[in-house]
Length: 166
Ligand SMILES: [Zn+2]
Image (tube, rainbow, N blue to C red; front, side):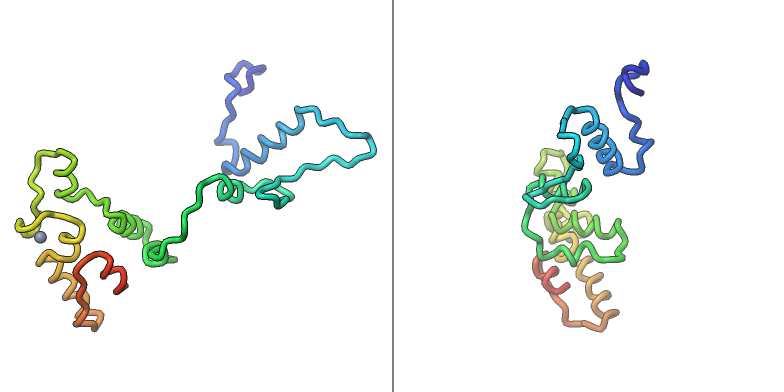
């Protein structure tokens, strides 16, 4: 509700379909309250310029791409963010690729008073590579998967070799 209406001057974002609609409305409103007097015979228009390119309308995605720091495209992008993939699977693959699973070795390195050994075999530190690739239980799962896909000679020893195989 507007301040002159007794509110705090906050806008109800739920009234807008998305953030882009809100920003577009906000910009139009802002441009109408500032005085930009022109000679009466001049057509008044506004443009949105990003990196020297003029746009007829405001585009939040283009603005965001202009403002944020850009990284180089990662080679593993298509392996993880597959078109039509299950979002939960892609997210887990993304976390695994970033080596951010809360494995026991990582938790112990953060100071948690737990054993760092593998929860499956109790013989090695529970790291991402051990848990998903090197553990004897994981090896058996990979063997069954490779047999099912008719690739019995598939063998990888670490995460980068797995990504190369994918
Ligand atoms: Zn293990």
